[in-house]
Amino acid sequence: MMMNTPLGPSQRFPTVRRSRTVEWLTFGEQTSDESGVRLTRVIGKGLQNRLDPFLMLDAFRSNWPEDYVAGFPDHPHRGFESITYLIAGRMRHRDSAGHEGVVESGGIQWMSAGRGVVHSELPQQEKGTMEGFQLWLNLPARDKMSAPWYLDLQRNEIPVFVTAGGATVRVIAGTSHGVTGAVQRPVTAPLFLDLSLPAGCNLDQPLPPEHNAFLYVYRGSLAVGEHIASEGQLAILSGSDGSDGVDLKGVIAARALLVAGRPLGEPVIQHGPFVMNTEQEIAEAIRDFREGRLLAGRDGAD
Image 1 (cartoon, rainbow, N blue to C red):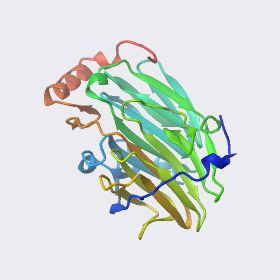
Image 2 (image 1 turned 90 degrees about the vertical axis):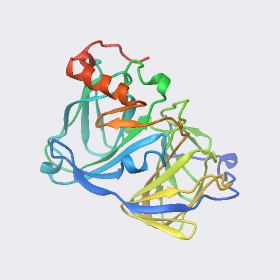
Image 3 (image 1 turned 60 degrees about the vertical axis):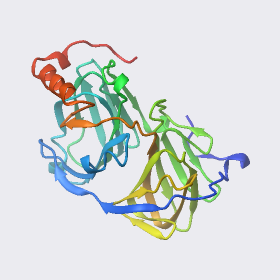
Image 4 (image 1 turned 120 degrees about the horizontal axis):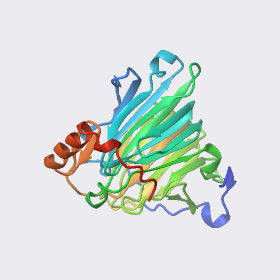
């Protein structure tokens, strides 16, 4: 995989004729899960329709072990994919389909729950900083009962490029400036970028006009047109306005996630860790979990 690869001349200046603007700026909500891990819920149920196909984004960052050491013990999922991206720390994944892996700073764990899986994500440290994100990506109705699969990638397996203006871009999913990311998902076509922009640095990122998109700033601040998104803010980017991308500029040296994807346009019914299309399917998921069927079968990746 590429690491700090300078772009060639044909890649340096993508054409964004009309940039998206910021539709809404907001801060996440401080919360904790059942095991006591402290989180910031950046995207929750209230934004699922607006940001389809994305269901949830949690951010976590702490130097205090009591905030994270409990981790996320065994719990079920069905009907969507979860992507855990670590900025700092070590995390082990285990699931009932027989998958296991440890990722460290800069790595990702990408799991498709499909028809159902029970998994855990537990810190492999008792001190130091734990920081990262978990993003939930919906599955189309036709794939919600597919076999679960899991992928982990370490920092050096994620493509990275540097623009002529000095922006560093880690391409976790999708394609940016001609650089193909670590993961591709054909139906929802997610773009998942980790951006590092020095103050005064510009970055143009083309985006399909029909895709929903958002920006989450976790260091410094960025300008999107006349709006400034500061540390801890979610910026929902406008759509359906003839724009063909977004123009970003570092205000204070910034780190941010830029995420976009093709909406599914399907009903979203969520009950805790299950995301389906009907109430009947949710009832079936709950029953299957209670009767142990999410623990059965070790199918492996498709």
